[in-house]
Amino acid sequence: MEERRRKKFVDIPFQRKLLVFIFACSIIPAVIVAICLYYLIFNLLAQQMVIPEAIAYNLIPVAKKVTIIIFIALPVTLLIIWIMAVEMSHKIAGPLFRLDRELDNRITGQDHGHITVRKKDELRPLIDKINILLSKNK
Image 1: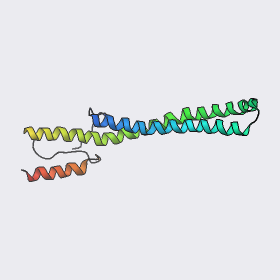
Image 2: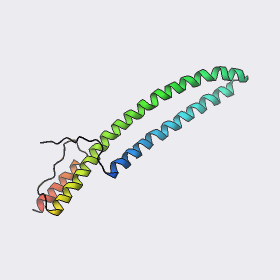
Image 3: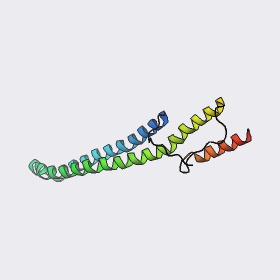
Image 4: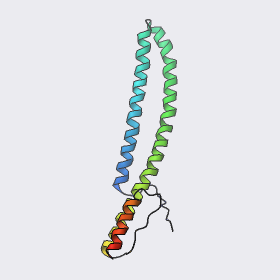
C-alpha cells in the first residue's frame, strides 16, 4: 500500500537549503537580465539620439512596456520554477526524512523488516540497497 505525504515541506534543513538555493539560482539571473535589458535600451537609444527631448520621448514608452513585461513574466516564471522545485525537493527530502526515521527505529529495535517508499521517490534505489543489506543481517 502506498502512502501519500500530505505536506510538501518536511521539517528537515536539507529541503530548506535546497529550496533557498533553487530560489537564488532563479532570482539572481532574472534580476541581472532585467538590469542588462534596461541598460541596453537606455544605452542604445542614448547613442542613437542627439537631442535629449527625443531620447525622453522615445525612451519612456519603451521603458514602460519593458517594465510591464518584466513585472508580468518574472513572477509567473519564478512561480513555475518554485512549484517545480517544491515537487522535486519533496521527492528527495520526504524519503530522506523517512529513511532517517526508519533507520532510527531499526537501530533502537522498535521496528524490523524492509523500509517502504513510494515508487516515484528519488531515493528509491538507495533504499532498495539498504533493504537488501537489512535482509542479509537477519
